[in-house]
Length: 252
Image (cartoon, rainbow, N blue to C red):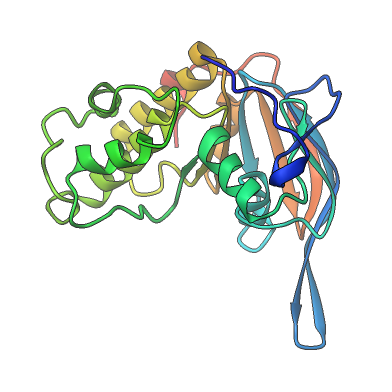
């Protein structure tokens, strides 16, 4: 993968930071203001992750998992703390800088598919990669997720699981440095879910990308390199798995 030239601090670009880990969070917090009430969605979150890792974030509803994902992806601003990706600080970027960050460095697999209804499955992937410099082939990516026979179908002609797979293909085809997944197997049956997990795992292993998956499915922790447990906006525990279980052996 070709690396973009390091951004400069001016013009909303991230500034270079010396850091050994690929992704680092230091004292990150997020507070939402509702009238006179402050709600702390995340507080003092600190951890480091490496490229090539498959990471699972576990926690109950309202624990702060989605807030964490949004901060990592530049979809929301941290109230405090610092986020560094690939040696470059992205915290505090302006709108233009965040747009560039989301476009060049991050891929999203949303819980809700967000497909364009007037475009086919293939066109939904193609339009996403038009602005990417080093993207993968859209047709080949759709084949990876088992949709080689559904490329010319519109979203309304696809099942919920098939739409989810288009969403996953769209994110992977961008060839991002960081792939963020919100319940990536939530709409999939057991067999298809395993196939998609294998695709995501291969993105980490074979393409040396960092994949972070938020899920309620505790069974996925066994296949992860690292598991982040989050509760009430705090990191409760981080477990490094020295021997991840093969996906074929995962049961739920």
